[in-house]
Image (tube, rainbow, N blue to C red; front, side):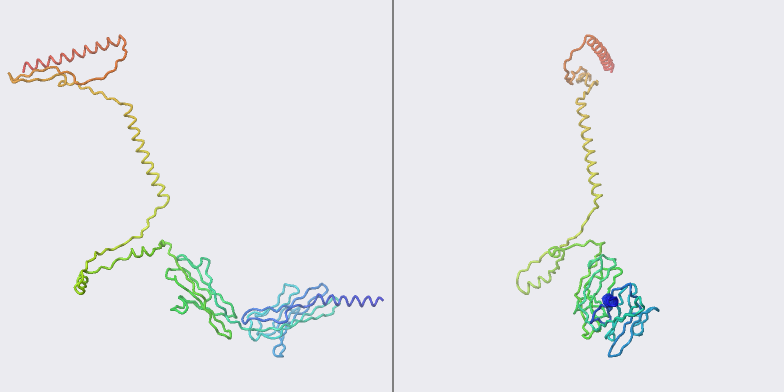
Length: 396
């Protein structure tokens, strides 16, 4: 009974180990010439088993050769044709896939992944899996042009690029042309990326690229042409309509001699038209916003000052509405009359011509006495002056 139980446990552990250490991958895989390819070979690691060796072999035309070997001493590439092109992951437990770079036609064949483990009882367990590889050449596809970060419209002096991208078996040869396919295009580059370090207005135009590889078809594929526009930001772009273009044209002058010659030849009356040259200047003058604001503020300040001055003058006139002018000259106080007898002139006192409009206001008694005294004094002064003048006139 104990032997039976031990046998059952051994069978179960064997089945469990086989299930854990089963290699998985792909039976058939197709790779593209000059591209990279990964041959999958993966298992689930177990603590009871330690990986000892990993061997990849190639069977081509019934010739068996070891390509790769991993053991306690490290990784070894056994065939010189694969050195620098094959590798197996080191830091992914359970993954022993074979990675091949730059596939060649001679890389086709049957690849076998063989893994050996050591159990805790020092027994060895080996599993293997075979994958068939085919290497084909794929013709290049129609290329696509992709612009740089600035797009197809770029300012003058900027740095940009155009990238030609195509699919197919490498190596793919690219060629760049300026112009249109089928036209007078100019060859400008042999790289996949067309670089412009400092764009100039002369770089404006249409560009297209070609792609070619060494597939059996040997077909050259051309992309669609794209328009690259270089803008000069120092000169504002102006759009001129068709009517403005006609207005900008200058009429070609016709000489009178030609018209007279035509008239004599045909016998018709021809009038000499006047030549007019129509020119329009599309000049656009613009001022910065801060200058416009400054001009408006200055104009408003000037208007304010003028209005203030006018109001002040009106107010001063309203405060002094009346002006009294006194004319008390000798010629106004007397009138001179001359006669032809004895050449003498007589002086008569003239009547005052100035009329004063006074309003009657109540006056105190003391004010009456003051006014009468002032009038008597002024009258005596005036009378004395007149008598002195009469005396001088009599003496003469």
